[in-house]
Image (cartoon, rainbow over all chains, first blue to last red; front, top):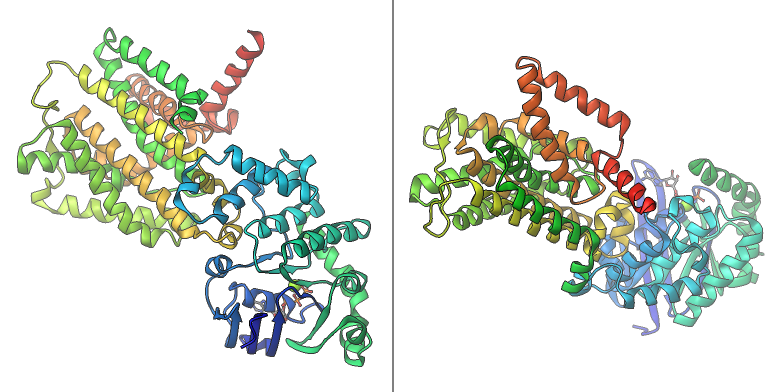
Length: 266
Length: 318
Ligand SMILES: Nc1ncnc2c1ncn2[C@@H]1O[C@H](COP(=O)(O)OP(=O)(O)OP(=O)(O)O)[C@@H](O)[C@H]1O
Ligand SMILES: [Mg+2]
């Protein structure tokens, strides 16, 4: 087997009481690749991310991460093997400050009891978090309670928390949804550069084709639970099926998607 | 590590306040001393509930551990004749902790009302067993002899009072230390977002389980100390669901703000009940209930927020 392969997916299938949400998914991802996942609403992008990170168990199929089978394993064990994720709707600790969120993430990233028993606010941990905050432009929000922050800042925090353990593979589910179009590129520049520095392999779900085009080496286009195109951006974005089933709807869906996210936080 | 704990403001204030209380105890009339003892002892169980509450959980069955602690003391005496304080505490702590460990495997998967009712159900089982079993004292329970200290039997209750104070100090420091640690912060984390905790690689179930065991152990010690102070155990005043209700009541009245709050709330409750009972022997629940409503409306964060407010005001003036 190829040593450079970080993720291998074979014949993945998922159905919910009759609805097929993932079908016949096959995929090889090499170390260090940056991949964009596109597709209309309900195409099965989140379901795919959820299966790889253990939130959903596939009905059938195989997922291998870094040479080990991880099919159906629970999220925390997958996290510990080095595959982390962020969420479509950011999942952070809402009543805690940005610093506390990161401190918890940093202390859990080291899985030893001694680190867990140390006071959360230890100098060494605070230093580490301050570095992370600098890298992700969170310093000015250090002591703010998370539920007072904008959606964009929360997204950044969500991603920062996912990467503190220096994962080998990171899956980002719509990192820019709910983020204003002016901020999108700043956010993605920050994130992608930081991850490239770390050598992390990234798969991210994205509705904005400008964003996709700018950062990815390869595109996976989803339609009705299947990958209808797996190619570099210039090929994929000109593919007739992609144009018909993804891009045709993407303008509308970007808008709808942001509306839903906003409504959820209104 | 120890230094950072001693530098902690709460801990310093607690040590000073409790030492003062220990001195005052020498001259307090008996009924006040008794009420304070009950209040402090019950405060330990409330402290346990506070830990769960901060995780977003309410147990309506903590009388299970409270009762186990109390009955452990009584049964130890009945079967071995021992009345030594150390043995009593160790056995109460162990029984409550071990049962909490086992039941925790079930309860750690439940939240909200299911957690509350399942806890209640477990405590009702113990209640039923005690009431029906002659060897366990049935509805009458047992009387508990005065506590001895390494063979010494004091003439007054003061040594027991001092011991309760010492145990409370240890418990407060322990829980404070725990809450300040990374694993302690998981109380808030778990309440805020379980998914995120799992995706940081830590088991939410385990985090809940640990808190559950600590809170069970605290309730066990609490029950044991009440049994020693009261000199008696019986199902209705130790294990019945009303006992659990009372503990939750005090928890809410105290507020989640501090590890000291449970003790202030619990002592307040003890005096409130005594006065209410004196004024209106047939309607004391009405007075106690009314007071709780008043506190909930006026101080949503509990009695502790009142103290906090007074404190900061004083701080500004000084
Ligand atoms: N837990 C679930 N139970 C039942 N059906 C589900 C569940 N999760 C997803 N689905 C269905 O699976 C399909 C794929 O959903 P998925 O969330 O993966 O879409 P998506 O591509 O992420 O869309 P969006 O762009 O809106 O986030 C949808 O038809 C959805 O209704
Ligand atoms: Mg989605």
